[in-house]
Image (tube, rainbow, N blue to C red; front, side, top):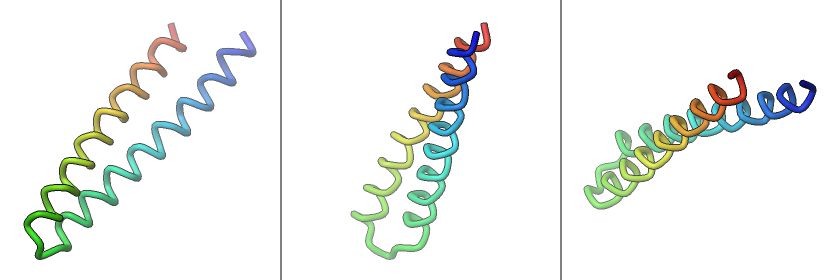
Length: 64
């Protein structure tokens, strides 16, 4: 099951990166006064939130 450990490590890294990116984009959205930029940052943050969900699901699969 060595492969599962390697996959788990990579998926955990993906999860952390997606969580960090989503947080950064949400922070940028809150910090800007430009409505267009705010909506774009929020859209990207939502996309990253989907990546978080996918990475979490991959971790579940590896754990099964």
